[in-house]
Length: 115
Image 1: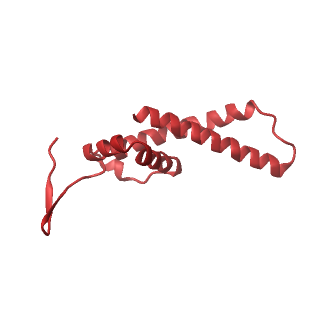
Image 2: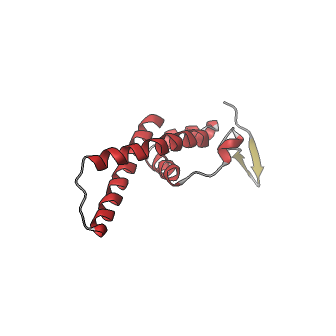
């Protein structure tokens, strides 16, 4: 792997691009941003290697696409296992809690697939 450097004053800075693919420059959605942040915080080595190689955003978009496909199925599966309350307010809160649990589970799965 060869890096190019740009001189800035007395220092050389590496020229790092986030993506080798122009499609990778499109913004991430909510779930993709959560996966990105988790990877950045919990697996700095992998994050840095993907960044330096120019594969970071491509991998993030792939992970987000898989996560968005899996999320509705997982929510439906989790809701079928529970008896939801009759009260509208409590029902809404429980559905949101299920959604949050499903998102967290999917983020963990995506983190394992990126490692």
